[in-house]
View 1 (cartoon, rainbow, N blue to C red):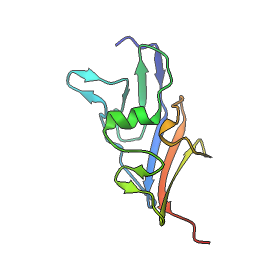
View 2 (view 1 turned 180 degrees about the vertical axis):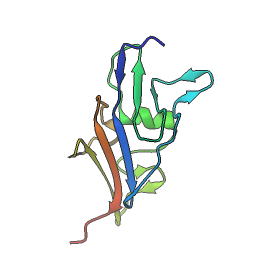
View 3 (view 1 turned 180 degrees about the horizontal axis):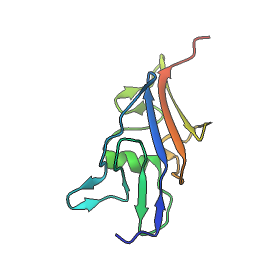
Length: 117
């Protein structure tokens, strides 16, 4: 694949404080490598494309075959007790699956108990 666009954001998912493993070779099989893929379990997402365009978290989760939205991360669903939050480079964002991937972004998705006030 001719690569004109090549970036490396990182993704971390924490379910009730426990860091989830993002598998090796998401988007890679014997015959094909998707523009969004992983090579290890570090959470680094490789975005390698013949054209420059905005890739989003929903694009990555679609390649992975997993769910991510404001209402669900993997198998964990938001409800009256639990909330899903996302930070990009330490700043809280509300874009969820629509977050655009940028080089060296550090994206963290949290599934945690709502604050008890």
